[in-house]
Image (cartoon, rainbow, N blue to C red; front, side, top):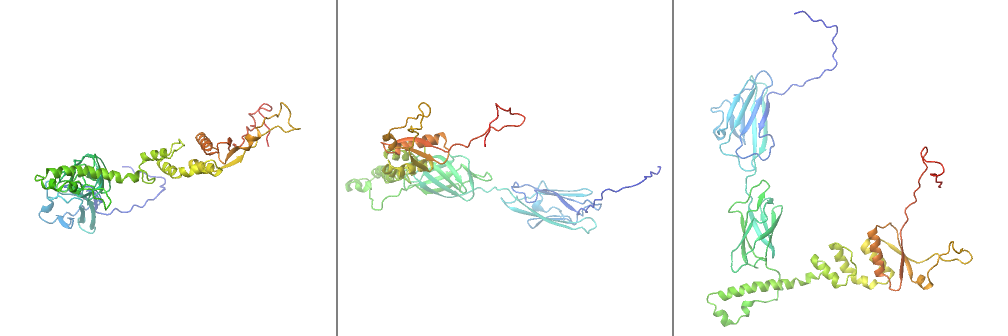
Length: 445
């Protein structure tokens, strides 16, 4: 082969390459810090020597949770607790692959540590590395307790956060008699608690058993018997301490003594439940006309009862506020402070009420047919006013403000004009090379 002679050799860049550690632990399955590893999944890893020596199989050790799983010098190499059907050991020139198959799967949500000790053939490059992974959650959630929080609401507590998969996945069975059967119509979860809405009122004091099937934990595990049910007492509304309304005790004594079969007592117990529910409804009447606790549908009835003259669309909070100040608005009707307070309440605007002034004919100065302005009579001007606002209004605000002022003003006065700030004047400037002198020229200061 002829020699190749170069006239010159130039080195532009020099890159220093750091030597790769040897041996190297790669292809770990499950990987370090991996979550949700399926139960029974084998543990696989590879040890690679990027150098010429190769991996020393006899010096290799693998521990799972502190227990020896693979010993290269041991017989057998894969220890029995981890020598399932998928276990294997394969070695090539530069790679040692180890697969460990636990005979007994790891527990649910277990943290598994894997420690690997190895070296290259001939020694001098020891490797000692540990990593962990977490097994999948296969533990079923457990129902801890249940409590009736309303006549048609039950709250169920579990031992871990849950997700509602079916609003009808709750079965209620009465354990005492007489009792009204109830069924779920919806459910909502919040952390470890789920609130179930019922189709009708529970029988007060009667024990119910709720069996939960319509929830799972965050990993999809449903509750399993016997930890999928809880017993609770039917909701009993509060009642005055001194009240005594027991139908059974109201019956004549001879009728109660003659009730050998208990049928009369059971019949009266059914009537007693209806009576207790009616009394509970009566006890809630004060909440219906209380401005702070009244349900939203009753707010319109309260305003109607107060003679609300305003037809504005208001949210629930604004309706409660209006019901609390409407009587005071009636008292201030026909006064300037009343007008200002009403506008501030509905629109949040500050206004000023100004006496009306008009342009009229000035004797000796006005010219007939040129600046002749017919002014109002003295009586009209005496009872007329304008309203001044400091901001520009939208059309709905303008319409609402006029309606408020017209209602709140004295009957004999006249609301003439709504004065708003005028927008700043805009100028059509002359553009050099585009505008034409004369037709498109406007001189301004």
